[in-house]
Length: 393
Image (cartoon, rainbow, N blue to C red):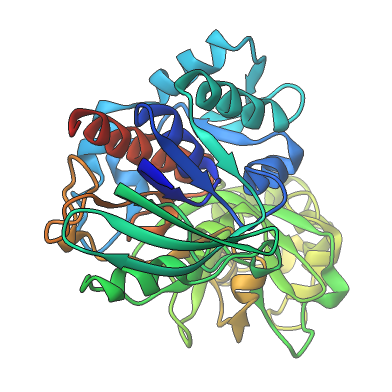
């Protein structure tokens, strides 16, 4: 069977590419339904992009590679598409955009766009072999127990990374890159909770606190959530992309609060009040109790010297912990790293040494922040590849 373009992976990037690559497209996926990551994202409402999406919200070996695709298909372009399909949406914190109703509306939108473009979708289809003769790709597929040979002039790899293997995630994109001589950078789980097997934070499970999470590479003002396994919440997920094993992470537990001034003022007006009681006005009581085991929080406000107040403010403004690990790919929202961008065109996403071979979405060494940025990279990189494929005819 001959097609103009074969796309591997019916996720966000693959479906968008199928809708933009012109006629003669075959999109395959081993799953029983397309867009499964879209379906589960955002608590079932899909954080499909971010109002503030910019070049600084992405990580990668080349800090400039993503700029071309993102500038040519922006969050506003995707929002226009959402509007054309009558999908109601709302903005949450920090520019995050969600469907008002169900994330499956985004999947249905992409299916509709694919249908309008004449793309063919095969589900429950596995790639069993792949070759290239210099002009066309030959793929051996297995579908419903039958082996099928498909040839295509273009091959788009949109199979994602290793994140959430229970949904079928594999390193297939990296294997294909290696087969065709493209380098793959180190890959790691990103946007992932930290773990502490010693159970030190288990008594705090469910407690949340606005914090500033930081290390030597980045800083995020978001919520910290304590869990039975360790630390989670947006602040932790964000900083995890910049964290390396064995490193400490610092949390300002009262960002935006001048604790020194606040305690000195309360010492003047409520000197008999217990320090732990006063701190309970700024953070959950269970967290204060936990901190009291490592920081001296005894006494009343009237007993505090200026130096002790300054020391206390410094400790709470730079509370350091060293994660013993992360939850890994099992729960990581994305994979950090991937197909090295040095081997790809930033304009077309096509391999420089293999005409017709494209890598898009999470498979590429471009990783966004939490909050809709990775979906926007999927849309933008897919449109870049699809536009280039349509122009190759």
